[in-house]
Amino acid sequence: MQTITFGGVEITRLVEWQAPLAPATAVFPDSTPRMWQENASWLAPGFWDPESDLVVCAVQTWILRSEGRTILVDTGVGNDKDRPRAPHWNRLNGDFLERLAAVGVRPEDVDTVVNTHLHGDHVGWNTRLVDGAWVPTFPNARYLIPRADFAYFDPAAGTRLRGGFGGVPSPGSAAAMFEDSVAPVHRAGLAELWEDGYRIDSRLTLEPAPGHTPGSSVLRLESGTERALFIGDLVHSPLQFAEPGCDTCLSEDQEQATRSRRRILEQAAGTRALVFPAHLPGHGAAEVRRKGSGYEVVRWAGFDASVNVA
Image 1: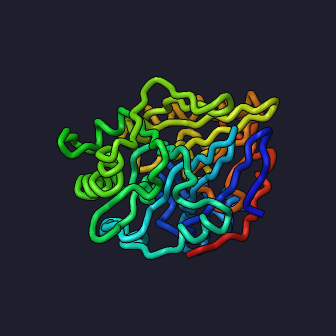
Image 2: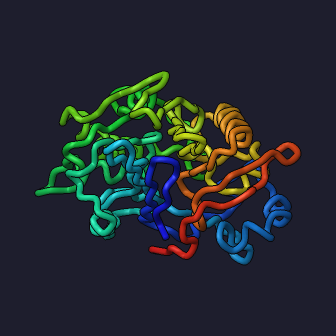
């Protein structure tokens, strides 16, 4: 099952890519081998492979149907994108649009696209290659893009990037991401740059949660007594529930990212909100509660944990 009903909102999960990604302590430089071993009983093998020490990662899009709208939360890697510094995702040729159609969504049906932040694995299907040109994939949608990220990653701004795998920034990849996946929707007049907050409908609101990128955001769902938080890259692995002080090497500001993560997880625990990180394989989302200086999983979401499209 890849669709659940949450209050008055239907949530469907579409996994574009899932596989072991990189060594745990390389992705999470503040973690230690002992942290992974102490949590191996619930992290392995779905989120971490102890034998290879590789973190397992999913790239996925959440499809929300709310108040007559079809809303996509993050758009994955995309096809044909030149990503030489990310060999797992370089020039993919997947069936994302076919599987989107299989759950009843055509590109022209999409009303709203939410990019929680502007990294290449969150904006890829913003566009597709048609006759050698990048064009918006969802021609009738408003693309909600954090203004702070738009300004930061625009190559014309000349920003000195800080985050990067292994601590090495990749300005060339960031420029390619912007030019092939962000600039075309802006030129087409489909981008809506927001700051401070944005209300999509009576159930869904966007709010800033900076650090991973300057414009990183959270989509808050409130429907009756039901609560959910789509938190983008505030959490890359459920280890960060238990160890919220561990950030990734991919954040532009690790200290600020950690503050945002702690704040949002505390809110989630206090309101029993289901937490939807962007990259969790397995059941994809979880309810957490406070345990010591961190959090533990109370329950996993009802999505099928056996999905694998690698």
